[in-house]
Image 1 (cartoon, rainbow, N blue to C red):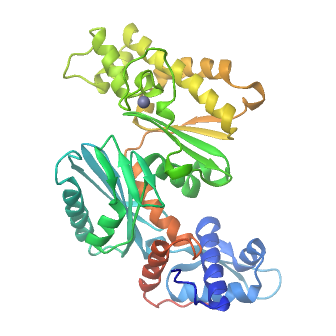
Image 2 (cartoon, rainbow, N blue to C red):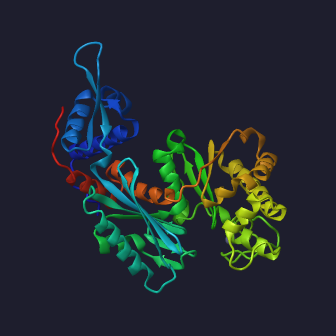
Image 3 (cartoon, helix red, strand yellow):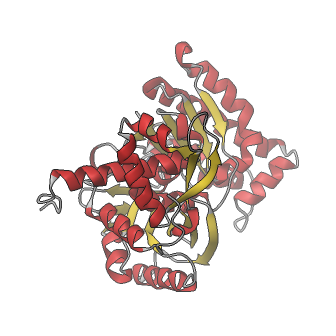
Length: 410
Ligand SMILES: [Zn+2]
């Protein structure tokens, strides 16, 4: 049953206005009240009442006073980023990366520990590690929730996660973490978390249609269509790595043959290099990249072939989705200098000519970015309107409880 069923229209309207105004200040601040009223089509009186409440709660502050042509100076309002925080975690098969971020998604603390996702007690270990990270931040601003980014398919309707990479099947990860740690927990596919972070705080901020392609251990895709993540039926959209690339190609982790991932992702690159005797069994992707850096022609050739397949496949994506922007991200971009030429010419040869203005940008690799993306799952709930979900509501309730009522300005 909806918890809003009995809410009267007035209080619902007030909640919606509050969320919209808070979001506008967070995204467009420093901003004057008059501009907020204009952007949202609200009355100046409503904006004044809500911003006074937010100021009292310490969630926003006056950034500066700008002289007005007539009358009192107008106040520019901005978010108080340090008022609260969120924990974001990227779960990899062999390690966990965590970040504590403030409301502006700036990382204020970073964690990394080894982790064995295939261990029999992996999820219990995960919650112990998270509890430890939470305890370490005792003096920090309160946490609004935890975001978890995981390679795999997360079905938000059933709350279940399927991750072949981690060896987890039908795991209700969010529910387990939430119950053990007593904080709202959000789970999503890790590439979706990256795309959400770009949408809220990054390159996708002013771009309603863009895609994030990731390369590295696998090949991933996050699709932002008309301003929001496109998830597909059951949350499975974006399995770009398992599209067809090579006839009778290598066996993929998914069981099929010749998937794009077998040509472009690290395991495929490494096995090709081993077949040619470039790497021994103990060497991996770092050594292959070092060979390419040193000018080894065979190593360069392996990357060239990968760049060619990726360029063709991304051209097909652009042909289907028509994005304005393509962000290429992930640890595999460290080898971009050896992928770039083949990618560019193959993309140009395969894209439908009217769509060739799609901008392609390579995102410099930052390890913590995935975890920051996961944390934005929580922050997004902060700025979302009520009605979204009970978990978002509980994030907002925590946010409202955070706050010392000090420094009243208005
Ligand atoms: Zn596959």
